[in-house]
Amino acid sequence: MSLAQVGLLVSANVVVQLVAKPAMAPIADRFGHRRTLILAIAGRSLVCVLLALSWLPWQLFAVRLLYGLTQALRDPPLNAVIADAGGAKRVASMFGWYHPAKNVAAPRGRAAAGSMLAVGPTQDYRWGFRAALLLACLPPATVLRFLLPAPRFPVPPSRGLRAARGR
Image (cartoon, rainbow, N blue to C red; front, side, top):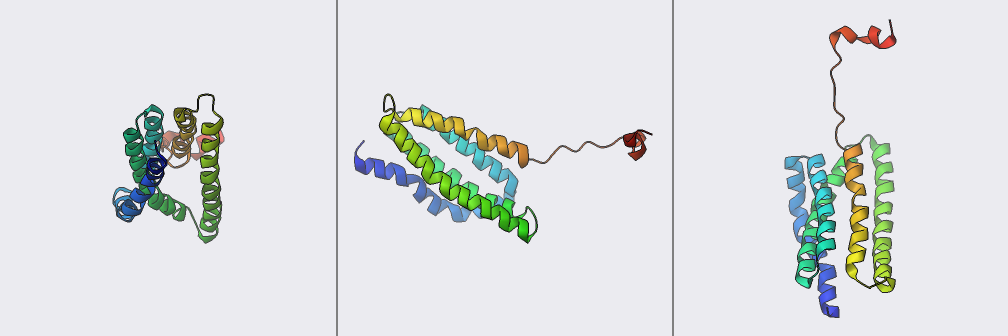
């Protein structure tokens, strides 16, 4: 690939984000913040699978467009979930942790990927995508653990508070 093609490949997801993000907030409001956040995170994991399987430049370009769409779908519900989390002090604290972590992790991840390409054993970009695929398993696991509501089991009437205390 030429340098110009690489530049288009890298910027493809940003263009999709700019165009799609204004439309994603109403979608998140309509279908629910948690549901659309889970869909966006699952979509990002699917993107990592597709990147690991991509070989041709047009495939990479198409997957990067899909990546931009999942990024656009992720941000509005994520901010709403953080805002719904609690009072003013808790929300400020959560945003205080989330945004620096996001802004520090993204450039470091890109630098690590570039280093892997530069010094990798075969200089095959798919190794970097496979490493990203392994890391992409973490967000869905975290979402499943912390964002999905806990199942509520009704307490049978015969096992009320007295039964719980051992009386």
